[in-house]
Length: 181
Image (cartoon, rainbow, N blue to C red; front, top):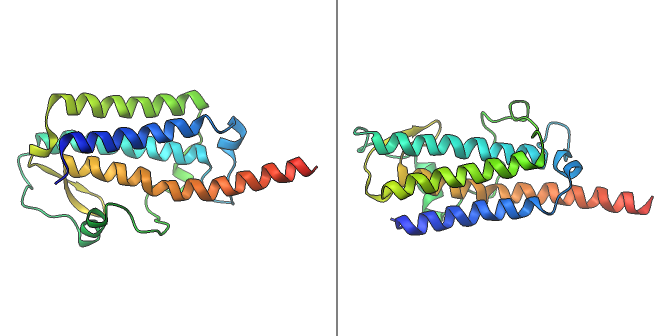
């Protein structure tokens, strides 16, 4: 089991990394979709913020839960946790292109990231989540403890770095085409 402090440090580093990336994009670049039906960087950020907020609610619920401590995560989840990362594949699920909105502005993305970081810090300052035994159910990967939810959300942010790299390649290609005109 990863320590309370290490979980928080890894989460903070992941959020800080995504916040720092924002400085490298114009508003237009954040809205650019790499292909029809594919998320823009702005939508990717919205997905990360929304999912992290959901994960935080699950952490809180798991901290209060007294049951399901004997329930296990899905074998696929066990593999993800064992390798400390998602497989290098595109994953589709309920958060589809149509259900993830474009951001209102760049500042809202930064504020959303700052809010989830603050919420996790507040939660972890009140309790050592590695000691909690309650669990809540992930929609596809079965049962996670509060600590596992935090580890999962960090791995989720890291997983989306590959998607960000694909979108970056499109943005750079478009910028080069504009430079030639």
